[in-house]
Image 1 (tube, helix red, strand yellow):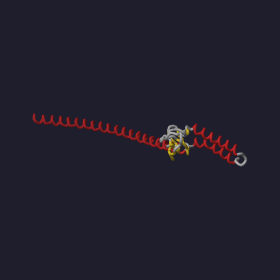
Image 2: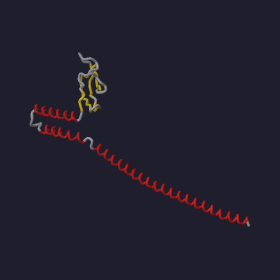
Image 3: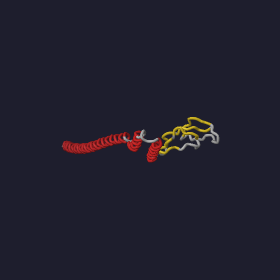
Length: 180
């Protein structure tokens, strides 16, 4: 009897303890499932933010490329607008060539030349002064060398084409004859 009673107590305790373990395990599983669901929700939100950010960046990149291309396509527009009036002056000089004397044509061309140089100066383009200056391979391209009395060697004595500098860069080297 005593044995029967202790077995009954054990049976009652075991199921009770087993039930508690099962309930506790179910709670842990439920908590873990809830935690997983929260993390999945956070992951979904982060993915959405990432996709929106990636799309915004792609749109920005496309817009920047388009703006850059527009700037490159029309970069010379300001220069062209400044040169067109000089072309107008040349056309007027050519139209009036028959009616005007050689002197007035020369004066007109000198004015056009002066206007052109003023435009270049405004655009920060400066001629490179070469005549009777020491030869500088960073500014000059020597086409010939000649002896000239009274001139030291390596001095520019003639200029075939004037050189030009834009800010600190050489646009065109001066084509020169150098003394030897």
